Length: 368
Image (cartoon, rainbow, N blue to C red):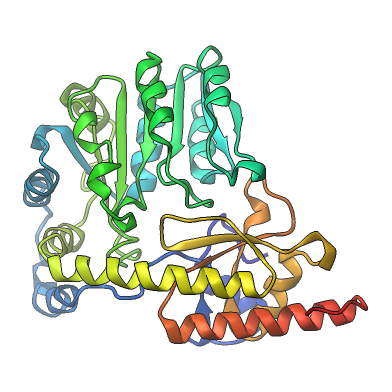
């Protein structure tokens, strides 16, 4: 199984599974911006490497100040972490909810973090009949059963934003709410959807952001959270010292200044998302509308194909896709692919076309 450790992008497991070098795979299983990293990252790695003999700033001051300026929130409301994963774990350990409401399907690390603290999960269904958009009645049913909501905004793996009426209901519910905005950078007019500013003064709302997806620096591990200053101090007290290394701090501060990279990234996604969605639909796949840089799809039941079969066949071709059936709430027909550059996306479409034809023929079916 490619997702042996619960994530996409595991090129080491792909190498072991399919017997080809890691650098020979075209990876659609992890959702990184194909335009990144920004050029300043290369420059920093060349020029700043000698400074690794110094300790990093324990308060991550430069990066926090720049984040505060960019998002117009108080610097005391920001905590930087070793990727969003660390902040998810820290939040669960500090809040220690008894019952947490999770949308299904959603990012597995929410549940893992809650289980570590001994908490229970309340499942909130995301239904294919509603194109996986969270519904008002399901949120209302959950409010009386949970003391914390932990939701993706946009959600992974569906790529759907929380509707505004749902956000309002959550904020009015009196329950604590953690929103994972790891992919919010990719959303057009993100300032209209993000809850960062509100989180900086609210005692019931926490927003977590990743910097690795949009800036394509997953190997650096960098994320931040915004919450009321009192809560930030409480969570910071549980954070391991020197959690954010020197290079991560420098790179994070530098990429925030590259406005041209941001504009180019959003323009690329606007164009390529439409093209790839159309191509997937032309293959006969059912595609979930997405706001971000990945697409959830399913093989029609009539084909009798599973994503595990497709993942194996495409992996042998050197193309990696995500087995989305591993997300609770999705069946064996669901897969997820990142949106990459056109040349790569063309290879993906051709690989899927061949895979569907071969697997269908093996079952004695035809694919028009």
